[in-house]
Image: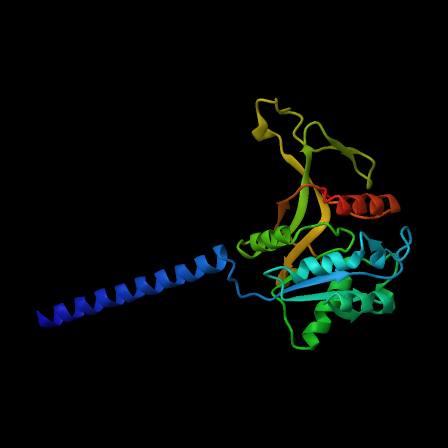
Length: 269
């Protein structure tokens, strides 16, 4: 009888200890997810080449008193999640300005600074250079300098959405409408393709049958490192959006002037 009592006491004690450990782990998860205490290495990459054509020297052109690239650097440095801020450029002047505003700089080879160069290989070059130095990020964030008026709060909320989810990537996007009654013409065969099931043709009283359409706005992308390496891109195979009001993505002089007006008047971008 004493043996049985001792056995059951031991079993109860183990269950209590297990429960206490589970409760402790739950508290840790709550602290990490809800209070922002997540111990992850988050790398922000800002690609800024010197050869912009439509707006010459765009990335260091003065925008309301600061070089364009400075806005993205400052936003990243103010983030509570981002650990390192790196500007990738082939241009000595952009490198100097970026360092003056607090960013690290990695000089990219000239073959990664062409008009036809895509962004993902530039980001991979930065990641590989840092890994050679012993630094391995958990999350890579892309902040394009052409969207200077994004807020740090938006960046942090979007990063939080990624690291507290099972998604492999997150990007900022705005609602552009609904699938009905939209069609597209396919470039590969010049045939028309419907973006909704026109045989069902949902009524306005059936919103559940009408999917929402979103557009990337270019202001924010983040991807977990394993997905980044696997897909060689800054959007993975299981992305989520962070819905925003549309940011201006500077591509022309008119865009630049409109962005400067918003900055000077503290208006929405």
